[in-house]
Amino acid sequence: MLDIVSAGVLKAFRVWILGSGPNGQSFYSRLPARGTMRSICPDEIIIACNRAILIPLFPQFWMCEDSTIPGQDWFQKGIKKVKYHHRDLECKKIFSDAIAAKNKCEYNFKHRGIWKRGEDPKYILGQTFGGATVSCRALQISAMSGATQIILVGVDLFGANYFDGATNLTDSKLREEKEWEQVSNFDEIIKWVSKNTGSKIYSATPSALKSPMKFQGALP
Image 1 (cartoon, helix red, strand yellow):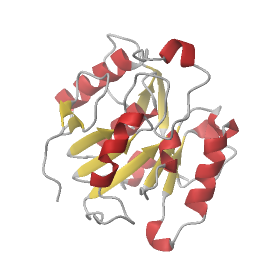
Image 2: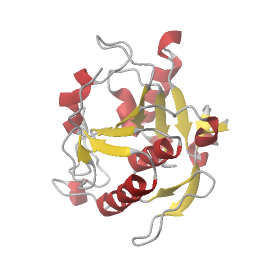
Image 3: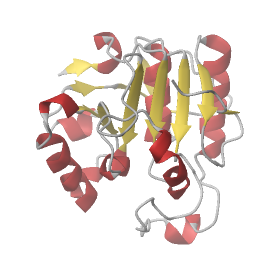
Image 4: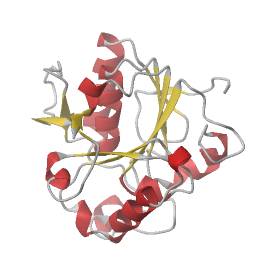
């Protein structure tokens, strides 16, 4: 198991970060995913975060963080999906140490702690901040790996519904039609990344985030 940043496999012109929010559905057909009409370009990467692995696409990477995730049914479905794939559609797993302890993966990522508002998120030895969702972790490792463009898809950060019609039962009362508490931290980290790295951050679909630019670029 290798550290994802040290491995250097995310150095690309464009990294798509795929969340599991329902707003991403309108954009799936435009993604450069393997196994679709629009073939993946050599310099584009898709990272599916958590439940987004169940979206009917074939990303190169699947990233999970929360130690409670292995107990959720979509995680086991995701394990089966990446296990029984065609060799040309291989998906590498990027897990936190807590998940990797009991589930085999190719890569892990380093945890620096929970982001505290006002704190300078200067990265040390490739470590990432928590407290802003796994999609933000994916953004941080992509920026540290040298991605030129990082584009969020389905990273809604409001409401309790997922792309497949399922509901977040744990936090549904708190999140129903409401902005998630992680939004402010996520926005602050995006601002730091945009200012201090060469990465430009976009959102291709509606989101509670205010810092990303709206993606309007032409797709190759």
